[in-house]
Image 1 (cartoon, rainbow, N blue to C red):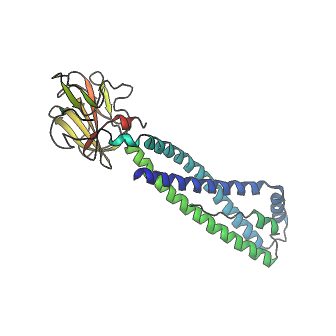
Image 2: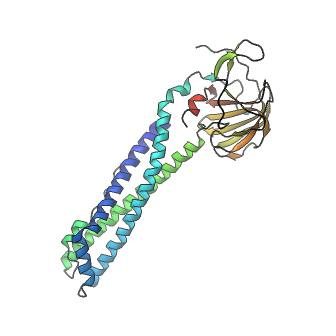
Image 3: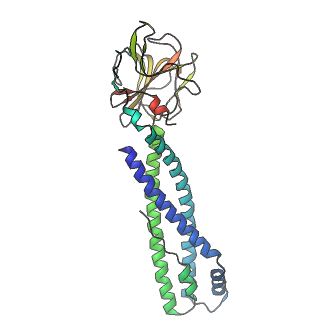
Length: 313
């Protein structure tokens, strides 16, 4: 459901940004056109220009400034949308892997237990271009011409206001999706270290028989930094049977990550952590044969393959 919403947001936002950029460029081109420049200079230099004409010129200048500002905002929003679109495409590429090999977590978050498991079986806003109206109007004392131009400027004001409201709404949506991206557990919990034991069936290192491995292992020297794979709230920080010193982080949306066998825990329950923040240090506590991090991803109570998440960053 989240992926569908992301696609709808990105499509609508892209169309709105392109429309606003197009309107801004058209307006900018109008400023640079010789006829428009001559008309503006003539109106500004002519001392017989009426107060109404001067007022209209002032209103146009103010609206032009607002349009330039909107164009800059559109470019910034377009950059943010590009980042989010890239992230959304990675989500789509590996969406099927999320449910693959799902198992009921033997040790649900904030409860006690051990990891030894049996083997598994297989909207476009309209921006009125005022350049044509300006070229047709002498901006002098003619009341009819001034009245028509005033109407045109009022329409322009309404259009710009609609664009401003649209951008404010899109900016809020982009912020929400950015927060979701920050919370997504797709970053390696031990940077620059390769996994040496994958998710799934393997020979148990203690009993030398087939057993289910509910996460992935990162071998590293004792004291190596363990970082949060995504932003979230710490729901457990302490000792668990067989897991040893453990940290669990709730990322929202039914996603929890578990970091086990640590030598030192650096966070406390209820603490908010950022992606990449150091939360513990590698160790060999609990049911462990050597210094490493055992990393799990739990989705709606099921342990799932962390590789399906880590591959998206």
